Amino acid sequence: MFFFLDSEIRQLAYNLFPGGNKPIGVLVDLFSITYEIRKNMEKRSREFGLSYGQYIALCVLSAQRDEMSSPSTLAEKMGVSRAAISSMVISLEQDGYINKYDDPNDKRGVFVSLNDKGRGKIKQMDPFFIGLASRLMSDFSESEINQFQTYLSHVRSAFEDVKGYGLTDPKMTGDKWYED
Image (tube, rainbow, N blue to C red; front, side, top):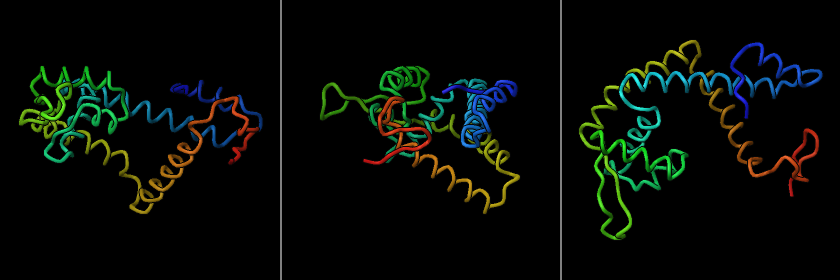
């Protein structure tokens, strides 16, 4: 999908749909703001000496039982490829944020675990990211935040329903998706 960052490009996207298309407009705005937030988080993570993905990997590890995981499980939880997690694990291990252990049950397998330096890095970075989230949501009431979460859940659920369909799928006609 396109990332509509510039207001002129966003307006062009709106104009592509005669009579306007509110759902497209909302998605364009959603893509735009999430892209900008992600870009800023990546920039700020680099100021801490990690990529945003590496920070997330450390956070995911910290939430695991025993702060340990296989790289494939870590990749699945983060929604990234095994190749991406492999290079992340190498980098995080070289920088001393995680430890890597051979899997005693599988000679080809490994586990990675968070160590003190990794926990320290999370502790160092968390205040910024928690502060960012707090600031972004500071103008919303608790009720509005709950409603926003509900809306996002609806979008996620709808996306799960349609993500397997291709553009030429016969189940899609015009603006309607048809069930089997």
